[in-house]
Length: 491
Figure 1: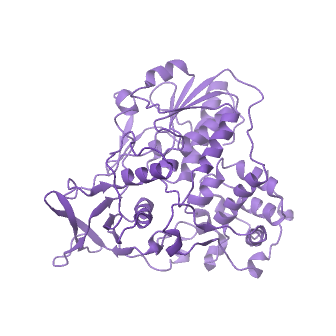
Figure 2 (figure 1 turned 120 degrees about the vertical axis):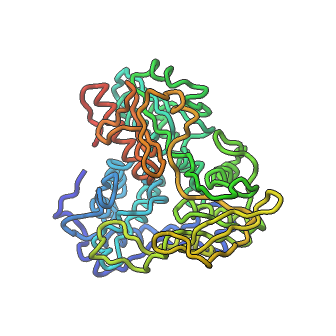
């Protein structure tokens, strides 16, 4: 659904209205709980922000520069400005199955690509997107959309993260019988177990799961495919199998002392706390189950990305005394050179909400060793590095640490389940950093195994939720076309 150019609303809005985004609870308040802490804007405030989206001729926010799912951002901004929330959610859903997810956790490359970002005042796209989704739920616009015609085809989806959920919803609406197999006790993948509740509460996942059940999708939780459910059996019982297992194996740090008590990979820590908040047992398939708690401790987080930031915010909420975050990269500039990088994602100083809660950030610092006494961590030995990340002699120092979390990324899916069962049959690709992904192109998403497709992080490597949704939607289209000879699912 496209809005004609002549229908575009307040084309001078960007001149008359200042950029505003939703505010946060004060850090001193929000670290006392694990709930979301964003203070929603009123409808009129959201509409004013939507009115800032001008008729810019070439909307780079659409993608692929700005939005992997190609959201029609100017269109739904105009619909919000004109108070047509139902048409806005219909437009948004035409490209994005789960805008309430991306409106909360996406880093918003669309805003980086906004024409108004040339003046450091982009349209508040992410804020408007979340508002559309939340308003749609409030007004009852999000309901099951079951297929009216059933194809008789049966599809299995392995994994219920954003790629698996998006694919399952699309395939179910195309009329196929869809079964989703999830290793954990509830659907959502790392959306549920990796992203902290203070960034996205899990009732949003639950609502989508209920919608999908109403559309005929069947969820099988506690089903570890490749271990207690065999891939070969799924292939025999289904017309197509889509593997959306994510990228969960932590990248090896290669730092001496990782065997000390108190040194952990980031994901077991985050998964445990999410399970606590969800009132689940902290035991989880594939992750260590000994309790990891930061209360009254000095914490060091190694890594500068989103996962590291999530560890920072979680540690503060558990009552950490001090949290230090180590980043081997130089401290980026406060402002980027617009003419050199726009409309692409810029390297510049960014402070996450978790970091703003009191983290000490050390840049251009390498982690040399985890040090301890009697097998227990007591500190992290570091040094400064030069522009080529080589240690600078004489700059060594030790940071006190009772717990240290390694958050330097992931190198591929778990190798103990699906990959193990299909060893020798499934073509894999290992890059120069040691990441191993399942080989399939981004047109038909077919693997080297007959009837077996793949999408999301397991194919492209660790990436954004919005990219996973994009891949799940595209893979669903490819499967539908392969099964039926043609498809009406969007590209």
